[in-house]
Image 1 (cartoon, rainbow, N blue to C red):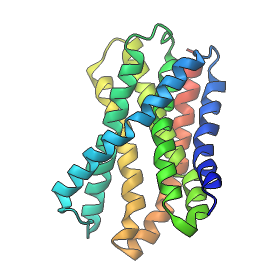
Image 2: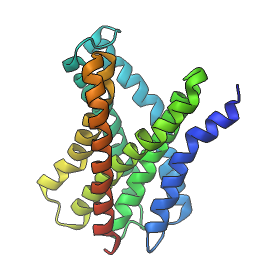
Image 3: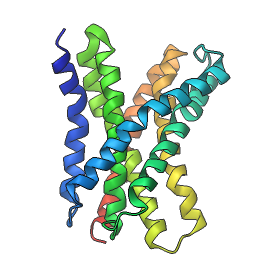
Image 4: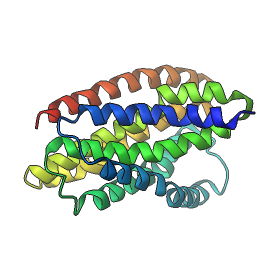
Length: 229
């Protein structure tokens, strides 16, 4: 089995999106700062995995959810909340003393870097761990999961910048975490439904594709809105 090819297939989608957001920045950030954001996104994967395992054991006694309600709880409480909370902490660490964080679009750029760092490592584990079916897994995640993390990062960075530069509104502060958690939770709830109900899973698979298309349109709108600020 060619592990090098698997790793390349797993890493490439995150790198493509990284360079896309980098090129959208009219005044690019220092590459070293973006690399730091990417690496801290990588670093949070291990502690987040332990937190997720603890929550999963507490909710499902070490097993898997057996109902759609359980899979939805798993999507939000085991995956979305811990992962997006960790990304927000990482983003705050990256930006709190960053003198280059001086325009609205920077929040999106740094948040996307953190999110893609996380997605990159997560994708390697999924692709390499999928055995003979790795090519299909890599292809599916390249078009759904990795762009999903990218879009969650766009939402977080958008509201982080609006809050930072726009008067410290409590409503906006809540949205910094709430919006990526909601998007992430809905994504995972649709994706996980097939593991507990085949019929619902088929319907939710179509809904997931529609949701991902809409999510990318929303992300692009947020990018376009702040690109000139």
